[in-house]
Structures are given as structure tokens and as C-alpha cells.
Image: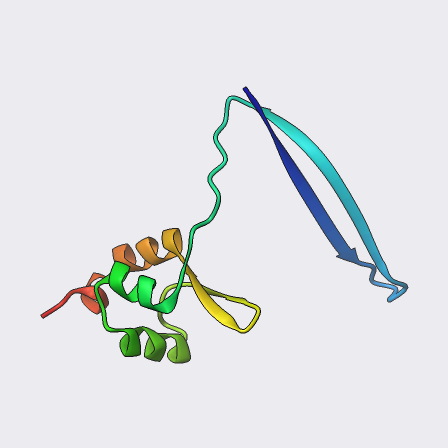
Length: 95
């Protein structure tokens, strides 16, 4: 089964005369597209096995898992959170 993937590219022209936008749909045969799973702060803290205040402290220090702002809310990517625990085992293990 082929899967359609829409790609959108936005380029700012160096002359400052505007933005060039392109959009294309590419069909990929026999692949599976995995949608990102975004976690709330409470869900991410539980997933990482840490306290929520610690997770928020990491965010302020810019050392925690990758986060995204969705409107005014903060969300954590599940895959990025797993990568963070793998690369920083001392920070995420409970004593």
C-alpha cells in the first residue's frame, strides 16, 4: 500500500522580497508513517519516572527532553523523551 506524504517548504528569499512556498505530495510504497505522540508534563514525568517539578526545572535549564509549545501549552515528544533517558541514565534513575 502506498502512503501519501505532503511536504511543505518555505524559503525566505535573501533579497528580502518575500517568501517562496512549495508544496508537494510524494507517494511512498510500503512504508508506515508514525505520527508523533505528544505528552503533557504530567504524562512525560510519569513516562520518565521523575517528579514533575524536576522535569520543569530541566526545561528551564534546557537540559531535559525535547519539548514543543502547542499554543501556550508545553508538550513533550515520547520518542525524544525516550532518547533523553537513554542518553542520560544518571539523570533519570531513581535512588
